[in-house]
Length: 436
Image 1: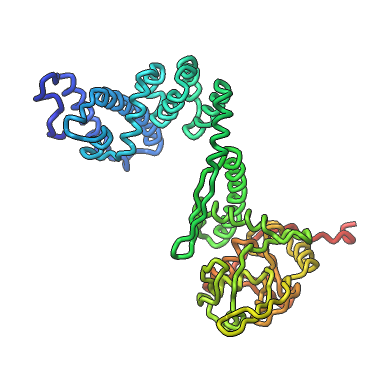
Image 2: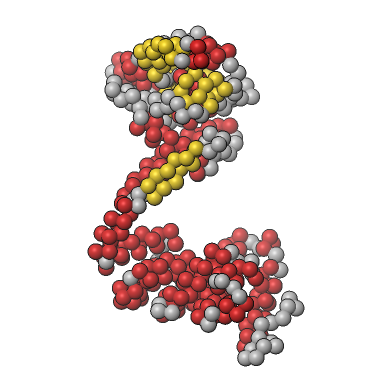
């Protein structure tokens, strides 16, 4: 047991009750840290984790209550501190933001007796209590009238579901306020895209409830599809899925943007990157994969492998330059491949042809097996459909695709070994004559 001094032992007004409480907490901490969790069966660990959560919640409730009393007395000002949160953060292992959150809850709980009782009993954890305190601060009279019902309902849902439950309650009890909030959200809508000095981009902003839900649902659907494709590849190779959920959301957003900016005049729905890049074709033909061969219209450097991927299925315009790279002639845009070829590719490939991928034709690019910059023709035998994710894998990830003399597509990993998956992305074509 720790031999640190117990608060109240040598202070006026301190009592044996304080000493016993602190000693009990220390004994519990000693018992828990010395338990040897590695020796416990899984079932015991599972049960223990649930029971401990309730008890830790009760401990935090007691701490928040004491913090509230201490804050109400402005005891922190005696040491010259500017704020209560700053005083605690300077003397404990707590972050200032976490302490400030507890202080807001402590102040709110003074007018929330039912919520405080549920907190003290361990029935409501601090994250839920914090959300309830926020809504009680905004609508004190309505909350007081419905506190018992809200506390009961909040206990039945997960923490991540509480904001939605409270939003529905807000809409029912504060119709005018809901309209005002919607107007404020609309007025505060924003989206910022800023480029870093390394060329990457950062995106942040405030979305309205409608826009946020639409975006989240769309990203979740696409991200799940990306995961399934990557999982099929990982299962075939005996590896683990390499991408994180955040990375898959990034890739999902890219695919949504690619579809939105697709060349839709011919109805093919094929993704075409909405990027303007200036690349020297002669230099591109002789460049190594990582060599810089041009730049985008905004000045971002473009490497050879990225330029080759973009050029697989993009509008290419000739620009003849004179001295000092001054444009002196602009040619018409050439479309690679033609709309008829895209339709033929969709009918033949049925979607992304990378082993294990199930992306439909509308989410794919027409990839040149032998790039046209290297003399590869723009015909069906030299093209195949690849989704954005696998297009990156082929151009920048070291994977290789080739078609044999029988028309079968072969994929090899960066180490040269062949990648195969038992199931293809589309069902086989049926011979209706023989079937009849």
